[in-house]
Length: 152
Image (tube, rainbow, N blue to C red; front, side, top):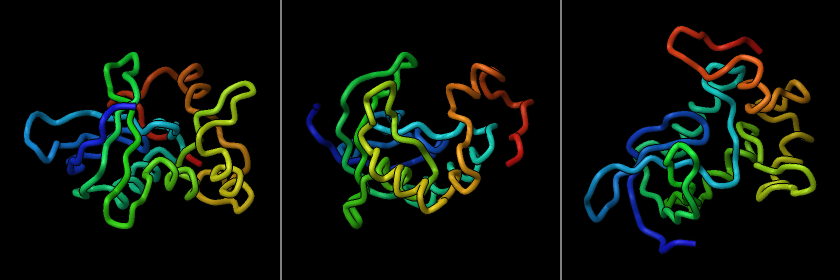
């Protein structure tokens, strides 16, 4: 993992992507939360997922630790809100607004938090087994400005 640095969240894109401005100065950086996958913004629960992350992170000071870059050039990072030492990815999963990023036999970084959110019927798990973002993209393609959010 990279060296942690402190930033302020300047914009929430969706339930798993944010823009931050480093406290030491410099350009804004787009980050994807490590360990989570949130609904697409035009998918059921996409707007609610974004609102949940906005409530947790907007204008908050955070500690960022970059792990890698994704195919879109975003830094994949662990992001912890300094106020309360809140891991944003873990909280989004625990509150039911994102999935852990498990696959095949790999359970994912926040599998316990997801299991508890499913059991409690929190957030997008209120309706049982919501469609995964990757499956949604395969069926509908990427979200665009002319594609409204689908219902619950």
